[in-house]
Length: 322
Ligand code: MN
Image 1 (tube, rainbow, N blue to C red):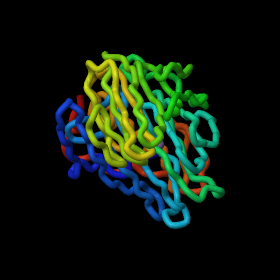
Image 2: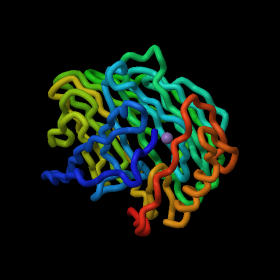
Image 3: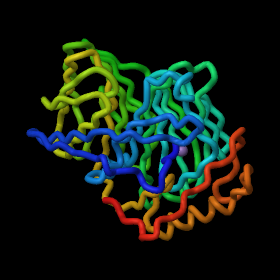
């Protein structure tokens, strides 16, 4: 996925502090690139919170009728300093990247792309897809992993089940299952489905902060009512998180220890400084040659549409997020 503007639009960001220290972050509607501009609901970053562990970006979309929205059509665009996670509930995407990976992204399967110092990729809903429904998340790479090799990890977690619930753990360890996919900071990423009336008390690492995205249905998180598309933030210090479904529901649970490093986010880049991001922008722009991409830092990935040019840098220096 790609961030469409110079900076995520945070004007509509709201936070509601409720008793029990569950902070409910409401999504804002953002158009993605593409001819018919499919819309997504963005809950990270927000003005008051940029990160949950190393998770620094969360777009939630659908269920969308692709014949109406045009689906996802993301031509070549670059990334630095991050990993992307595509997690689908319905539909299928085709992923290609400059590290030579070409895969189908299917519901319930993790595709984790690591940018390292530079990667470019494309994402498109496939022609057989009638309904597209899922999430895209970014993970910030810590400073000592910024030079790691660009790569794509794929993992299809087996479902783990109990009375009234079913989960798929794609990163980290929870619900008695551990994902084999290596991460650069400790991370948690899981999907949880709950039957109406079911409560799952999730045992979590008290050193982690967590967030719960409600996809569909209705839940309370530690007693706080959450609406579809909302992200409930829980600070470190909890050993359990109680998720109760007042209607059949599906949530994503993410977490990690507080990131502890300041980052600069602009467009599709996660950097440590304004200058590092400005350099990445220049490097991408230098690779653009009309409808084609020349080889360079971000490599080359084939696509029927021309690459996405970077927007102009803002006139002010990018500010650090913590
Ligand atoms: Mn992308």
